[in-house]
Length: 254
Ligand SMILES: C[S@@+](CC[C@H](N)C(=O)[O-])C[C@H]1O[C@@H](n2cnc3c(N)ncnc32)[C@H](O)[C@@H]1O
Image 1 (tube, rainbow, N blue to C red):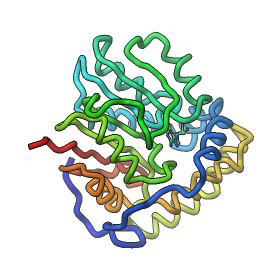
Image 2 (image 1 turned 45 degrees about the vertical axis):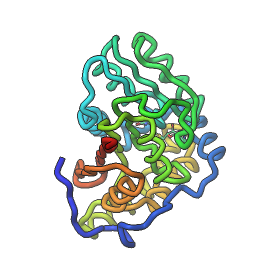
Image 3 (image 1 turned 90 degrees about the vertical axis):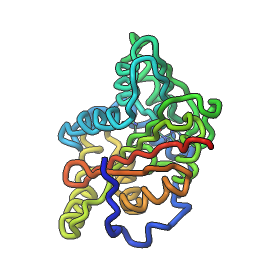
Image 4 (image 1 turned 90 degrees about the horizontal axis):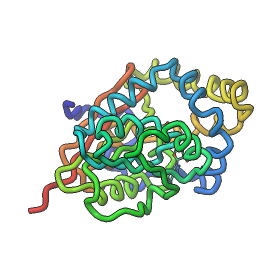
């Protein structure tokens, strides 16, 4: 993945730190508990089925191999965690953590045959795992929900061994400004509408474009990963830039 050191497309300098979601954690968790039964259908509908390919790209970016250990943070219903589990195989190990019991309950049910995959309720900002326990950590469409993005990356980096990878898949704003504005306006209308139809949770899905408003550009996110101590940070834009895939490496101690 080439490091794209282009000018930031966001509002301010890429050196900005301490970005985070202002919505309190209990409210975020309650929202995901409420939409859990419809989440997967919503995801496919709102991304026109592209989300599966994006998660495969995230899995590929980890560089995981048979027998490795990985953690998927803010795992939701476990789609990326299951891909990681298939990659590491039955002699590997994948921990999937999320604050929402409702989201996790679905993952546990759907992927009960993957013996190497374990779900656990835990906060991304205080992972209940030892330093360097994993070969890779991933977060897909979860970072935007955390109270402190840099702290989220720092915590993922802590539980990954030196030389291991941290991967982040997130919604992003396309670089071309007119398209970005169009996409944003569309998203603002479609998200609550789709939410209302599928989940009868229109209010909850309005949260999505609101959280996108406050989200950093791909370059700012890369700067946040570097500020969290990750090295060799690189990213690429997927599907005309509506999603960005970031990868960093935990530095070798020396
Ligand atoms: C948009 S969903 C993404 C789920 C999944 N990773 C995917 O790819 O579909 C965001 C998830 O982040 C979880 N979340 C939000 N804040 C969290 C936190 N502080 N710690 C752990 N999980 C959190 C939510 O409960 C929700 O399941």
